[in-house]
Length: 95
Ligand SMILES: [Zn+2]
Image (tube, rainbow, N blue to C red):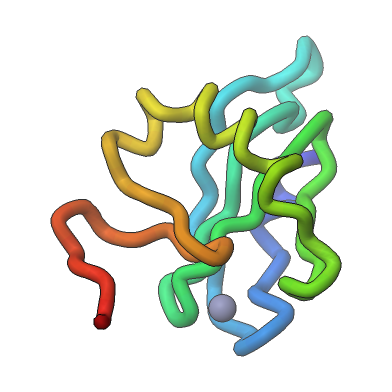
């Protein structure tokens, strides 16, 4: 998907702007793999084969997304993903 198209997307839950992290692009400069991150609800939306996965939580399968997160460890810089939310590093979970 084109970067300009992806940059127009907003979070389906709260309509907030999404921050794009690009990992790979294809020969035409289109985004191939990466993720979108909502600054409001902290949800992370993977981009796989150029398609952003922006389903509601109940239609997402953590076990399918885990291999991606494992592969993106370097780019995630140690940040953890819990319940589809990308936590800031050092941020503790509410108990
Ligand atoms: Zn959001």
